[in-house]
Length: 145
Image (cartoon, rainbow, N blue to C red; front, side, top):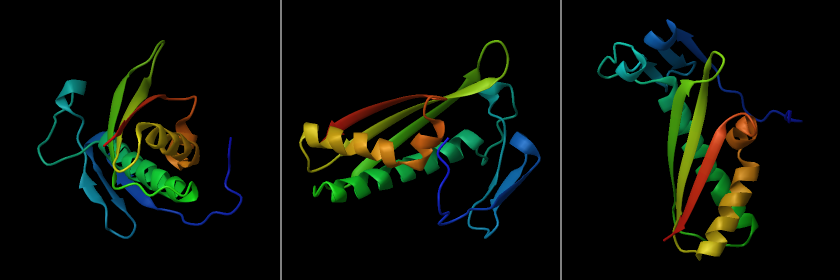
């Protein structure tokens, strides 16, 4: 387990009512109602989100930032890095639930080889990737554009 030597920032949030409730960051900037999707046997209320949606959004942003940082470290100057994240939830045996993640990364302005190097380095740096490595099935597709 990789524990930070020096914590630089700590986010705080509260959830009430579980997957059919509400979650909010302490500063109020994130404030969303939650609902279990119909595909999982829930009510799928309109205008709500899921923990997986929130995880997908956070992972995509963090991963993109890690790739941008590593590109600078490698003295490369890509255009925008677009990260599309798909987070799936399903049952695992013998009981419980697990996640899958697919990241579809488009790197503009670099060759395919350099784009792949940047993404591989970003994956090693990203705290989301590090948190779930060897625990969640993650696939990454890289496309230079």
